[in-house]
Image 1 (tube, helix red, strand yellow):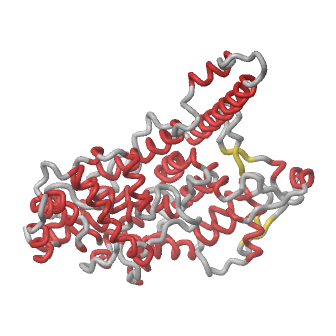
Image 2 (cartoon, rainbow, N blue to C red; image 1 turned 90 degrees about the vertical axis):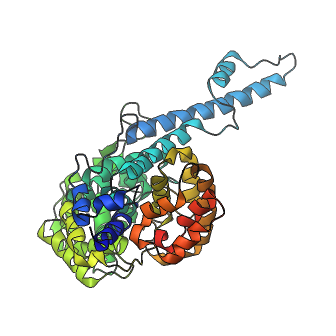
Image 3 (cartoon, rainbow, N blue to C red; image 1 turned 180 degrees about the vertical axis):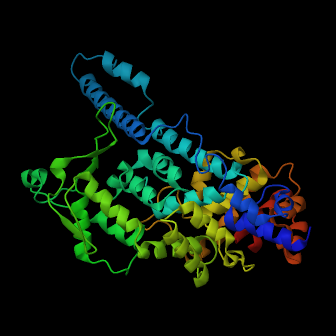
Length: 476
């Protein structure tokens, strides 16, 4: 076994996964590329155990009911206070108010159901990253979830289910299927304001004096498929927005089906539409699906996706040869994302020894928890708080473009990572041998200066914190 193979194995785990666990560098050294490629062939790759997690519709209905109950409780409490001030009134709550108060937490208590919904989803996500052998497919899930991002700040109940339902099943499938699943998901329709978009000449538009909302159409063209400055026009945006009218979902207050996708014909702008020079007859909901299918196959989409994948995994300024290989594979395979991922790993340009990518906060946190092997000594709520403190709050990107994927976005926050590293190390360092962990986590990537720094640490806690803050660990 040569040091070159161990170096490649360490590089593979940091660049394409979430970093090593103990002895993994040596285990992968025989065939690092093959090990990463094997991650694509795992049964149920990209999926998570979701037996106890609600669907988007179930979560939306549950949160709607919870908020309705909270509102009723507040109103009953106000009514009780008013009645208590009346002459001759006692100090006991009316029976209905007393029953409700006993069934629900105090008014100032943290909302239990919302916290439970988001934390259960977050734990499933981190479990998948931490427990994976390498984590390449999970990294792809995180990439696509950010590419097709929504925000829990706007559609709280569906943030986790959206990733499980729209992203994970298609992460190694065809881009066209992923695109259809994403754009028709209630979370995306609500996030980009399409649920109330209606054609000016549609039945609903005429009756309500309303018209289209362009947000979803614009982001599909600019962010999700073709990319900015790819040749589409404002006329294309308007036309696509008209095509998408009628794509909405059932209100969460409807028992049994609230929060589920629906095509409402009376919202749909009637007539043929032209997008990017091609005419699409009015086929109802299928009109938009036809446009999306063509956008998925557009060469500009292939170029846009290739550039983003290369930037995410390899370098902020990616080798154009690598971008070209990914673009060609995308076009040659009709957007087969598994084959595009294989092309990424098989390309020599992906294995440059220059480790220039700064790990974003969430990837770095997952790596720290994975390395120590004691991830849930830290509650998931605290993990989420740490991620937010570092500027990458889970499922809360600042804009539809998602979180940035370049060093400039994260470099200023690196000093603050030391606070998180010290806190986590204080909970995880017992029983860990820092120098052994250094070899497990970085192996031949470690410089003599870094090894000396860890060896001179005053305590295990300090050594662990310093380890995950070394330049070698911060970069992929």
